[in-house]
Structure formats: C-alpha cells, structure tokens
Length: 306
Image (tube, rainbow, N blue to C red):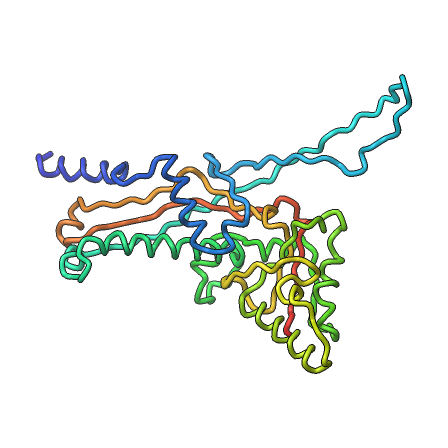
C-alpha cells in the first residue's frame, strides 16, 4: 500500500473520531442552557440530562390524606408510605449540518466574525425547532406532508396528551366563555393546585382577548383584566410553535425533555473535501425525547375558535 493511501485512510479514521470542537460534559450543559433560553417556553418545562440513549426517569410521590388520629401510648400499626414509578424514554438522534466557504468569510463585511454569528443563529433556531418538535412531533406523519422529515422524529406532547390525557372537544360549544372551565373540570381536583398553565399560540391568546373585548363592548359590562391573561386564574404561556385551535393544560414541570450528555458541535476545516472546496464544515448533534410524568394531570382543548 502506498504512502499516500495510508495518509488518506488515516485521515478517514481521524474524521470518524474527531475531537476538535467537541464539547465536554460541562460545556454541553451550558450549550443546552443557551438553546433553552432562546424560546420563552423551553425554560419552563422540565429537563433531564441522561447519559444513556434510552432508560428510565424515576419518580416518587406521597398519597393524600395520610393523617390519622393519635391515641396516647398506643401504636395502631399504621405507617405512611411513598409511591414510586418510572417513566421510560428513548431519545432520538438529531443533527443540524451547515457549511461556510472560506471565500464567504473573507469577503463579507464582518469577516471572520460571521462564523460566530452564523453559529449563534443556528443555535437559536435549534431552540425554536426543539420546542416545535417537543409539542408537534408525530412519528405517524404522512410521508406526503411537506414537514415529514422534521415531524416524524418523535411523538410530541400534543399527540401524547390527545391519546392519554383529558380531551375537551369545543367544536359544539355555544357559550365560549365556558371553555376553560369545562376543560379544567376534566382534570382530577388534586392536580388543580396552582401550578397549572394554559399553553397556546400568541394568535390564540389574541383571539381570546378580542373575544372578551367584544363581550364587554356588547354587554356594556366590565371584564376583570386578569381574565385576559389568566382564564380561571391559570396563567397563559405562549408559544408560536403551538397550532391555532388547540390549547394545552398542564404543570410545565410535568412536561419533560430528556437529553443525553452526548451534545456536541463539531467543526472541521480538514480533509480532502474541505481543502478542495475551500470550506468549513459544521454539525450540531444531540439526542432528545418528549415524555410526560403524569398524563392524568394533562388536558387539551381541541377545535376551539373565538
């Protein structure tokens, strides 16, 4: 085997085990935080960092009404206990690749700083897309859907809540002022504990506020300001990634994104293609899964228009 062929084979092996630009565990957490903070909703849900690509998230709880009467100098044998369980997860590997030519970096008005700017833009968009897939993902998406390659990655919160949570179909509702009350009453009362939030798109929130305004103008009455932003005393959380016509109800910490520590951004300017095409190559890799701790503590309003 010739010397040049040896060099090429060695380069191929080095490329497959590339460590240049690889984030270590501490940096991975920082990178994840940067992604989370790029959207208003992601910081509010729960995040679990795991090493394994699939496994379990442990949970522990205590039953209600555990108090018992006390009788002096008597042990009736009663002991309060805890309940434990697990939530299974299987992360999906995802990536975002991009390339920048050296000529672009030489000839743009910002010079080399363009590289950092593009990386920051990619990171921000990863945050937006992550929020999108966590809520809207559906592995059963039809291959004819223009967003098939994106939506098929994972089953999101909307699909999971629709399948196993409390669903309120508002299509036949006449008095739309009742919609939030009706949906809330489907949840067991123990979950209505002050931690619930309504999740909806900004357009959906604006439709609700305009509906209330028309009700006030039409009746000559006054609607409390709090009702515009917190129906039934439950705060609205907005996400532009949520679809119009659907409103979710849950404690944000009941919704979990699982990631592994295998979060990395790779960059290379080496290799035959990089040299011949005068390019820099980048790929962001990470794993994720959308899981719900207590599906019984979730609800969704469907087919709602204001």
